Image 1 (tube, protein in one colour):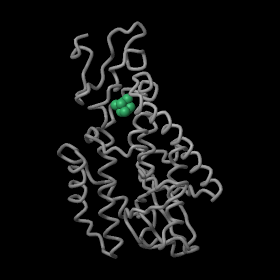
Image 2 (cartoon, helix red, strand yellow):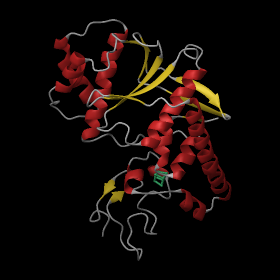
Image 3 (cartoon, helix red, strand yellow):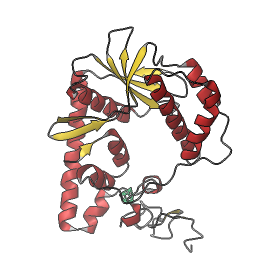
Length: 292
Ligand code: SF4
């Protein structure tokens, strides 16, 4: 039984074919997605750097401010950033201000611990960035999800699904089931906290909604698998420059943008030349390169 995760749900949302292969069939992706560029490098570097800081704080360690430039430079390079790394100003601010009061009001009990639970005949899994105990309030176990987005709760669907899955796995966990639960989104950019804990009823509705969505994809995908019908595959696939450009299936996907000439894929209405896009071997080709 493939496991439902918030990451797979978000990844699958752009294309029903991708959702079918990842969420229903549990395919292992055949190739790594393209490396991050631009602002995504900085986002990944932030997450890597704070992950090291949080693990130190969890052990009760004291951070040596003089080590921060090296921590930041290492995270930057491992995230694919070019030399020289930008100044570590953000990490200096984050560690000095400790905006989420980690190790003080919130005791870190786990970093990126994978939690699982079964519901509605499916296996669900979540790996919150941090699990903390509220030491000054009601003693709740808090799942903290870090976000580099400027407005971390803008994608309401993704946030609600994430919160419902987090709540489910916390309530199924032998270690945490009996405590009060809280789901928090932490804006790394601003240091703001957003309490997105759903009520039990709301979480149940969201999980039922995900289950119905998966059943629909499952029915259409199985018909395509059994029939091998191109029309069914085309109906399932939702190619676009953005979806296919970030999809690890694009190397062996017959429907990857810009290969379908029906107007959804960058081709013009008359079936003419496609716009710039990803080729099946993962190279980004311009119209000129493609012989237009
Ligand atoms: S390559 Fe494009 S059409 Fe194919 S599965 Fe991925 S996102 Fe969907």
